[in-house]
Length: 591
Image: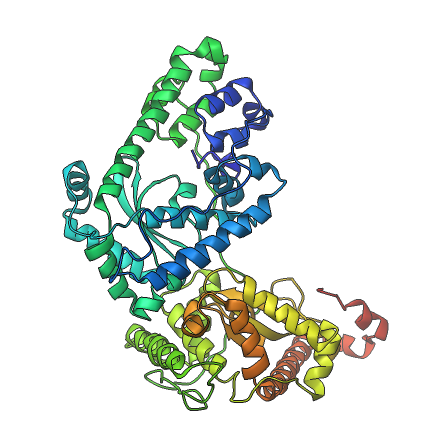
């Protein structure tokens, strides 16, 4: 159903004329299929479903999963995080058309074929958490039986293989996300998803999920995600719930296809499904998209056209010049923070540093050294590993560990004991110029850090003025063309891959603040800016960034001069004169 969406209309030849037919609209309503109804351009008035989304409690007391999942975890996870998603969504949908539909329809509508709308994250996280709580029970674990076990053995070879695959998916989901067991195309499969994304938007029937956002386990397990995963499967999972969901998924899949047949074969007259409609290439393509053999059987023609496309990935880097460094080291070292682990107390605890630097940061270093050993990356600087493995957005395996090492070193050096206050000198002048005031910067930085959904970072960067044209170079840019901006990035991504010059970073992965602030990210952000940030470090980074920009511009000017000499004929050299007007016409404003 989900495949029949705006982005795949062309590939399945679902023309606007087809989508506006009474046959398609009647078919979509008969099947109660919101994905099809959204594509129907004829309007009809659905009944009002609900004026608000409720916070559903777990199907057990908050202390019922102890000692495997503590009441404290449930107090925060359900009582704070889950509740906040509900409160935020109700504010977002109040007075809108989404206020009159189901939670599932809000998810599908706001997913918007991957071009996510603001309501999606809250709506999907509500659904995901409801599903997660119902995936567990007191005294859970064990092994499934009956048809579920038969399908597991058929599709994974054994129950142990399924558990290993689920554990791997949950352990390797980088950053915030979920691991899922799903039923799709009459088979079981294991998938993982980032942030709030769930199988509903991918056309699968979810059977089981494990939340691997850090707030799901950090109170009980700290950085030991594998132990949390094992505990979930050994002591908490409800295979009875999974079996029940499997029955529901099978029934739903059968009902949908049978519904297609009933509508297409036995109720043609009542829904105006004419033979002309059934013979269209659109109906035949639609039947194949839904993978419904019964529906395909009523198609009166076979349509064999196929078309495809490729979704672009990542951001094209403007510069095509390669920077080659000498061999630096056969391994990446774990650099300590520039202060004792207790030096930031009471604003950031020694325990937080012990886990954040001593476990998480160390883990990235150990993992990267294993990844690059014996490869060409082993002879590069950390920055070059990041640039190479970012691969213009088509990220290679080494990127996450390399970028997180760099990000954490930068983060530790962004703080100092007795920090905070206000910058001075040129840094403050640029802040006033680009943000209106120091308070303007702080508000924008706080907003970026607070609204980065899931794992990620907020940054203050020094951005060079560049033309938005690949391989183009600015004609004689001035210092006024460069500016300070605030950006945010997901997971491990940092401004180096966008060719910005980072000046300040705050880590908003949950492990950065959960031990000290629990779910109160805004308090952590305020404490960082009020009590910890080192504006002296930011100022020195600004000076270094300006030097690098000047050196780069000098290099480019020399290259331009060499290219001009190569393209001008000798007899013409005394006839060419530039003018200030010509230079001025070359300036473009990229803002």
